[in-house]
Length: 145
Image (cartoon, rainbow, N blue to C red):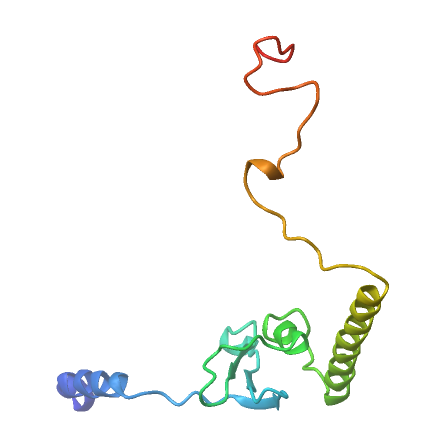
């Protein structure tokens, strides 16, 4: 008779346990230069889990404000299976910095050569093209129905 006599005790114990916060144990995969820490729970087909679970924790105070590095975002979204290496991240970060420096040099040279800042495009009726053969409101317009 043992356990079935204590059904209400089991129900209450399970209810109380369901209110306690669960500690999800994921494997620490790596950390990026922003300070985000990445975790994974691997797939386990024997338990019916076909895909791994991946997530990250941002550093205190940022709370998901900054964009993620492209390599880590691809890993989180399952577009790549292996997490990025430190060398790969450092190489891509150096390329991005080099592009910023080169863009600044090109812009400086353009201004020295007499170029001016691009004029802002005004939105509204003036930004639409005008055609000599079509004048809005003209009763002699051949394109009018």
